[in-house]
Length: 522
Image (cartoon, rainbow, N blue to C red; front, side, top):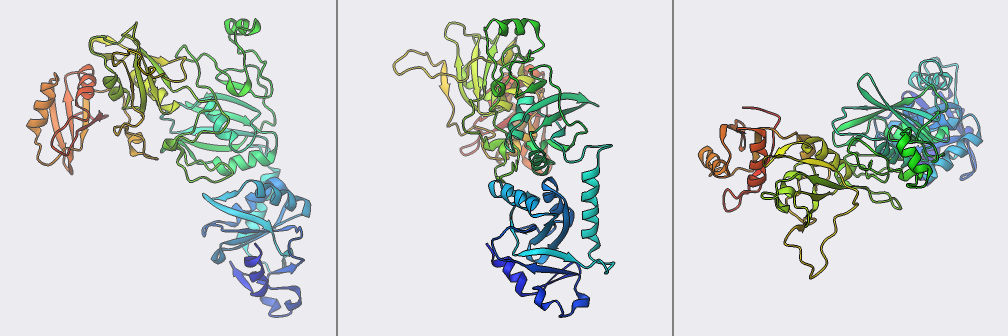
């Protein structure tokens, strides 16, 4: 598209006190007032001046300059805020061509908006240096860019290795999650994860500076999950990562044959009991079964990638094509055989994710498989429900070796032990960016009640809970919203049993009670 660029060649444009002249043959017109002029060239030909369209109103010169830094030296910049356009001048056509080619294949992004990068119809962006006030913000941005390129002391300049800090880490973030997110931008070579100052951090190496720069630009400040697990990204001082082991803490994707650091596992691998492939490495983790394999969809993250996407990946559940399906199946053991039903497990595990299927094992009814819709939901369920006393027994929750829960074949007797809930209207997290993600708490003696109709009073609710076998210790309506209340029961175990029985309890003809665990007490 040449139209907008051509328009600038025909009409003088003003930005931040800089005036662009339409073409060299008009240069004598009000020359003293003009600080910048554009020399025209044949349209479509490569130029060291790059035209950037669709920029957000609030974008600064520094952000425009930042787009060009990985490709070479930036020599000038002009932002036309009123027209949502900018011009960036590179030191040579080779750098400019590399930049245009790169952003032709993957869309550039500024402040969450896709911007379009093309050659300008002008061959040069000239700034008259005799004017000392020639756009100070542009000059500052250019100086800062040069400083960034020269910066090697406290933080690396543009570099192939990124240092990533995960802030507000409410949910677990694994090496595999990071691999999947950062692979959207380009090929990841190596990852090392560690904890420093009680903060989860990682070093991630790309093959080239351009890809690392793109990852930094598009992922810095994004959330992995809804409203939490924020990525803070800077350049590392390291130029290469030395990875000794392929395990759940570090991975060299260029060398799948590295040992895991676990002697027993390494000897098993050596005799061919198991095989490792770099992107799909299944390794023991804290649960004793398999680490979540790569291919994990991101959830709750408005992830830009280099190609912008509007999906809040948290509840959108984006999966990359060609990747194996991640493990979403939990093994729940030591259950009370007399009390457990598929519906009970659906309700309890539904507090931490959208349950798709439940199977109580026919020959071992104190064991069940629970299939969640997303891998991070399985992690939430494990962290909140493992070793929790339920129906008088301490249940165990771990990742299963199964990738899916099989439904019984037609005509096969099942005694109602397997149920499919994929179309259930009771899923709490099916809406993208659901606020329910922000209200996930461990089991507690106090339950949060919502969707209470105005016709139902405190005594009716307390009676219903007492009838379900709970001993009610306290009750309180929310002062500003009578549709919600807190109810405190005798113990956490009582509250778990009450939630299973009372969630979706019919309070009136049109209202069903919603129950979840609360972080508050009465």
